[in-house]
Length: 202
Image (cartoon, rainbow, N blue to C red):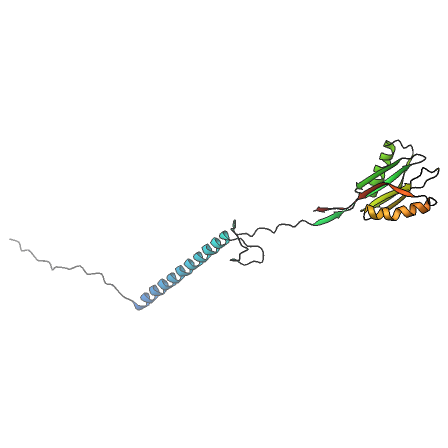
């Protein structure tokens, strides 16, 4: 019988866990850096989200801080542009009188935007009333006017024109002047008109 040779039993070696101090320190340092970086990112994202939420919730006029009673619900976080206030402006108006030569016809105009327009309107009306040759004899602006003539039908009469802030004031001024001009004959107002400025907002 052949002899069986018993081979020595070889046990497998266990893997060794080598704990090197330097490697442990590097790993720990990297872990701390990652934790800090993650913490910074978390804080930054939270601050960004909070700021965006605050801007979306409130819209404040320029120069007014958030939380003021003047702030209101916003759309997109931008404060609304201030509304432009209308600017008041006075518009002047004109009036005019045009007489027909040799005819008892007087054309009038009022509330025209320019002196030229007032003259043209007065001449047009004078001709429409039958005037052959019409000429502008009086213009006024932003005022009232009164026309006085003798009460009696005199062979030669002179009509007088006067402007003032009111018809009453114009009448008070023109009547005595008309009487003196017509050799003391009493006069009365035959026509009055007003052409006042008006307010517009641009």
